[in-house]
Image (cartoon, rainbow, N blue to C red):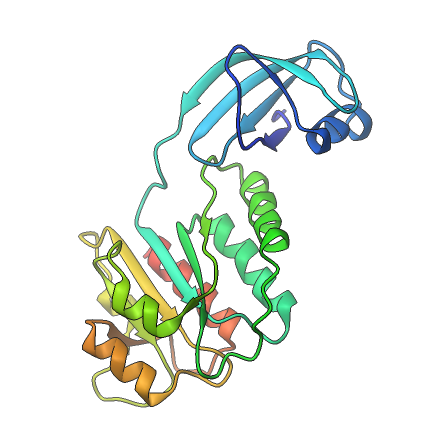
Length: 236
């Protein structure tokens, strides 16, 4: 049976007091007792096995039995830059599934056609944390604050392989899957808003070495396109 798994942003050495929310879940929801074991992660690769020593419902104490450093996300390091959606639940769905797939970075981008400007960062971060725990990972993707599309295009320095998926028909576009091979260790892809990128935004991306790609023969919703891109980049 798998041990219950929890997120603690800062984990002390030797002994550790769980935050109030985790303590409540361990003691009141799961009704765990002294001597039982749990797993903890800080979302930065640290995975800890701990034993409950004091099952206080607001400040549960544990002893650290074993700590290990899990290597950074295995396989290709993937980032998706995608516009927040008018229907926020669809954006939340994408965050959950992309986290389960092991995405490294998520950039919410503000484009000329972005309809939703309000960004509930804490709620969205909580969704990512829950998805990380559900998928039993020790690395939490970095959810960045919203950034203007032009600034992201012109200032990216972390990724060497750059793609943009848009809906304008171009002879130069090829399938994303055809551009992937084992030598590509990292990739950033831009996914447009519900009204797609503007021609000026596409031109700027192409000028900055983003390669235009297609995600298939059908027109996809933004959140679907972002998830398809994440899946291809992580698994192909």
